[in-house]
Image (cartoon, rainbow, N blue to C red):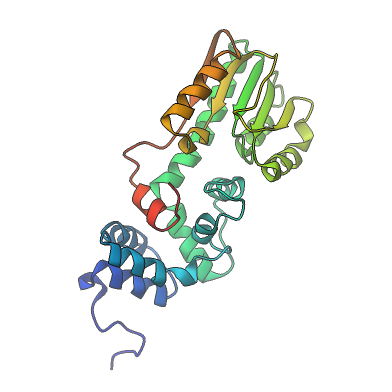
Amino acid sequence: MQSKNAPLVSPQTMLPIDYVRYIVEKGGPVGREIDKLQQAINAIRSKEDILELSIVLQSRLTLDTMMGHTYLKPYGYAGDFEIIEKIYAQKRHANPVIDAWDQFYQKMDACDAVRNRKTYFKQMMVDAANSGAENILILGSGPCMDLFEYMTENPENTLQFTCVDIDATAIKYAREKNAAFLKQINFVHRNIFRYNTTDNYDLIWSAGLFDYLNDDQYIFIIKKMKAFLKEGGKMIIGNFSQNNPSQYIMEVVGDWY
C-alpha cells in the first residue's frame, strides 16, 4: 500500500514547481535532491510560476535558514557579514529541516566562489608580505574571517590593515573577532564614497563590494581608490561572474541582485 505521504506522481516526472512543493513538504532536499532542486528552480521562468514559487517557499524563508536570512535582509542588504560568515564556516544545524535547506544554499556555486576568495585572499596577503608591502586597505571588509585566518596562520605578519565597512554591526563583529590583532588592524565605519585618507597603500582589496555598484559608481570608486595607492601598488577587485550559475536562484529565491 502506498504511504499517505508519498507523492501521487513520481518526482522524476513532476513539473518544476511541483517538485519544489514536494521537497518543501518532505522537509527539505537531501543528497542528489539538492542538484535536482536547483535544476527545478532554474526551470521556473513564467511570472505565474515565480509567484507560486515564492508562496511555496514562504515557510522556509525565515531568519533561521540561510536562504531566509538572505531574502529577509535583517541588516538591510543581501550578502551581509553574517551570511558571509556562515558561508565560510559551513556549520551544520541541529534541526534537520533547517540543515537540509542550509545545505541546499551552501551547495550553490556562488557559495563555493565566496569560500574560494577567502583562500585567495590569504595567499595574496602572504605574497604581499613577502614582496615587502606594508599597508593594505580592505573595502567592504564584512566579518573579516579571511583576515582572522590569515593573522592566525601567519603570527609573524608585518602587514598593517585598514578595514572599511558601511555596516556598524559588521565593524563591531569583525573587531571583536580580531581582538588579538588590533595593533595591526584599524577598523573604519564609513561609506566608501565618503572615505578619505592621507595614507597610501601597497594593496587595495575588495572581494564583494563592487557587486552592489552600478557602472558609474564602479568607475568612480576605482578612480578614487587609485589615488590612495603607492607607486607600483595594485588593486584586487572580486565580484560574481556574469556567468554565475547560481545567479537566477539568488535572484528569485533570495532577492539578491
